[in-house]
Amino acid sequence: MADSPECVVAVDLGGTLTKIGYVNEDGTATAVRRLDTYRAGGADGLADWLGDRIAEAAATAPGPCHGFGIAVPGIIDAASGTVRAAPNVGWTEMPIRDRLHDRTGLSGAVGHDVRAGGLAEGRLGSPDAQNVFFLPIGTGIAAAMIVDGRLLEAGGYAGEIGHTRVRAAGETPCACGQIGCLETVASAAGVARGYAAARGVEVGTNPDARAVAEAARAGDPDALAAFAVVIDALTESLLLSTTLLGSEVIIIGGGLSGAADLFLPEVERRIAATATFQRVPEFRLATLGADAGLIGAGLLGWAELRGVDHD
Image: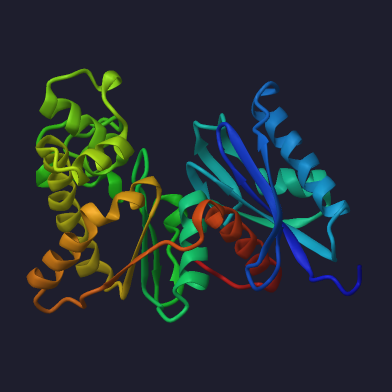
């Protein structure tokens, strides 16, 4: 056991699925398990269940286990270790870092799931860049931003690019209460809605984004039109983010990255053609897959142990 690598317990907590495993200091993840998220006991029951899973994992680790890192969806105040609001898991003002410490005796860190994934993709997938913009596009859209090597947190509010307005979205209402948000047209759900609208059918009876992508590759004009809106929206939004942040690399992840051939080359071409003084970013696809959030959670745990400030 003494010859085994040191590790932290890493957790990617979701509303229905929780991933837990070990992450070494170099970012290697091992023994990743997927568990149904415990919801029967309410907010406190989930916190206790999570603490017990971390304690069990630490006790059976293949090598010395020094702490934990956890990634959570919602508004996460990483500095205080508090989940301000996480509707998917039922937490509001939950001091989860302290709760887990009390339950396990271990020190650790808490971070936002997208920012944790962005940290992992930036550190491990694009170690050559100090200014990275990570954009996972799935049912919704959020971003993680690394500027001069530092992960931006802003008290948990940084990165909600999906809820910035773009012209391509017009007056489309968003679930957040605003209108014309990027997420309404450029997310996987937005692609499905756009295709449904073009065909004049109910969204619930429409193929999902993967099927729309297959239709677009087969030349379906309605599917191609849905992705044309994605191109317009992402070009506008990412040119703005590049102007503000000076990103060297933009990493595209999430479920819609599987259809990147239908939008990413044109977005990249348009940004390069439109930019004047801005640094033109290199576009890359995410490389860590579904475990990026867990790996990032582990890196946050190690940073806490080593006293490294990512904010």
